[in-house]
Amino acid sequence: MEFSSKVISPLKKFALFYNIVPPMASKGKVLVYRRGAIGDTLLTFPVFEALKREGYSVTAIGNTDVLPLAKLLGLADEIYTELYPQILSISFKREIYISKEGTLAPFPQERIWLPLYYLKNLNLPLEFNKKLNIPNSLLKEDFKDYIIVHPGSGSVHKNPSPSFFLKLKFFLEAKGYKVIFLAGPNETWLFKMHIPCYYSEDLTELALRLAKAKLFIGNDSGITHLASYLGVETVAIFGPTDDVIFHPIGERVNIVKLELPCRPCFPKVCEERKCLKDEEIFERILHLNLF
Image 1 (cartoon, rainbow, N blue to C red):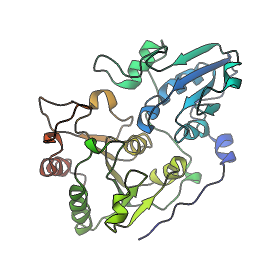
Image 2: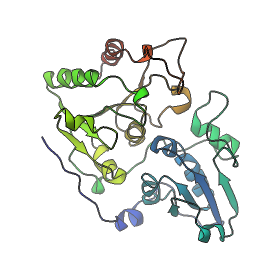
Image 3: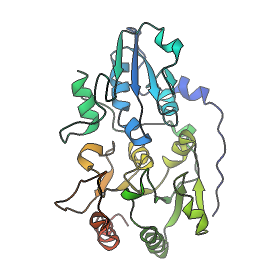
Image 4: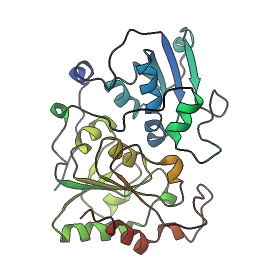
């Protein structure tokens, strides 16, 4: 089955119909600067939510692949890629710079879940929604009843081998499941192997489809974080990265990892890749009894 990604026009009715937090009179503007990958940015969404609940208008600077989703959900009011001069001229009630030289370092020195690290250090409430609830009327049916497999991530060092994912695909199809491989800019090798897949660089468009999936299987990647946050049953494979710090947000996420004394070690990874042994990872997934 082949799919093509279509550009979706701005969903004005989405912004009007649905907000993840109730509207309040604005107490002023807050600037949140957080440059980072998709997963890192999604783990920052609880900061946006906490600020919105306190009645602030949020201006977010960072990854504009994923920030449009925050705006559509009512978590951010304005989004930008950079600190443009016109932004610097605005008077903010509070400015939060999550960066090495800013208000708060992007990653903790201790092993603590990233959202809690941000909220605690910014003196914000620790409670937040574990699911991004997109109205059913906006969701697309393309992935309904499908198991979605995303074999990539932002680093090849976090991924099991391509042969692992091919074995997984054949196993699932032999059991009668419908499987779709997801591909983005980092997974072009799928095309070279002539594997049918769904290609998308539009994260909001992908989210509207992904929310309907039966199951998602992926690595420690931004798309895995997205699937889990959308409430999809998710299998998240963690090799050299720390699942304590980078655990996806969601109540239906299953972490698959090998308990080794040498992990987590990212980014100083070894050549042996002991934490990503295909057979052992495959067995751990089977033991979840999801299929």
